[in-house]
Length: 457
Image (cartoon, rainbow, N blue to C red; front, top):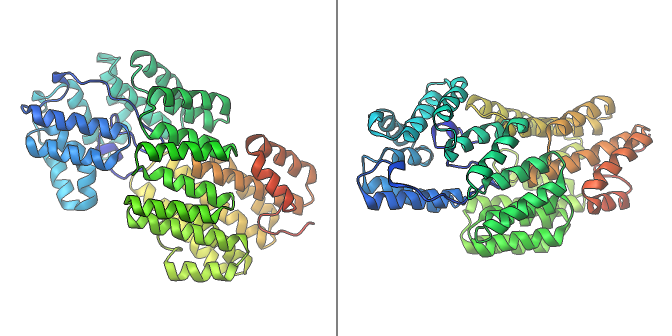
């Protein structure tokens, strides 16, 4: 979750991979500007952002603010990007938004600014009340209804989020975010058939957008339906050649299926399509580490990590998981602890910036997984099992990253229980994993139920 998430239009800026919607045509009074050209640019930005075409959206919003320097909503939509480029400039722009005369704006615009102001002043606990007060006046505003649903979704409160998204679909059928989010809720809860139905409805309605294909591909990846997953990700890329998430998902799919040559081909295509170099470098590092992991070249993994900055740098989360495993396999406990400490510092940074819900839970699960693997290889099977179960409790089949980590964490648990003489419990867990992804379980069984190489007790 971005640090400034609550300062921007979270109702219309849909945060996170796997989320989009079809824009509802705007009426002139929805957004306050004297410039038809600025309004057209703003609406083009809204349309692009609702499809997760982030770069295109920012260009449109910047153009709208340039065409009408008094266009408050356009400036608010530029705050997050401005903060990334120059913190001082971003803060100055946000101060301009907060200083605007809101009496000249629509009720919806007033709502967004008041919501941003509450977050800026560290009054986040007031945001639900601000949302509910607006919805009491205008109960069927899809932008604000979506804001309420989105907050519940990212906090993991699916009991609240699911009926809100169902209502959103009922009152505004073009807001297909409802189908997408309901699909992810179903997927998180292990209701995979329902998730597939939701994602396919989403794809049917918005087939000309990239994200519906990407979302369905993540479900297929989780279920071990690799051919269908690859087809979906490729369709997303064909629809939008710079839809970078689908390239990353293809690399994850191929690398965890042992197709490293295919991974390299996807990375080459991503670079040629213009993927930011930081992403390309992270994917290349992931692919190289996965190849070395498959041959148990633990020393080479640590050498690569040290030379490339993988331990401290950004990148695909599984690179760090595999580097940590390599350190544990070699008994390099200081290195393993350093990686765990880095993960804990990252969690503290998230919390300091006000992150909540899914991102925080995922980071805590990563920490528990790393600690559990280390303790298992140090011979402390009891504490290791407790930590791996704690990670399992936090992890949901939410997206590609979370699903892969959950499946592998469960296989680690099964291996640990077999090493500890808990054969019945281990095979019961393997059966549960098989019901989700039978392909990976077959490979796990062929390996003698070994991911990290624990000896049988």
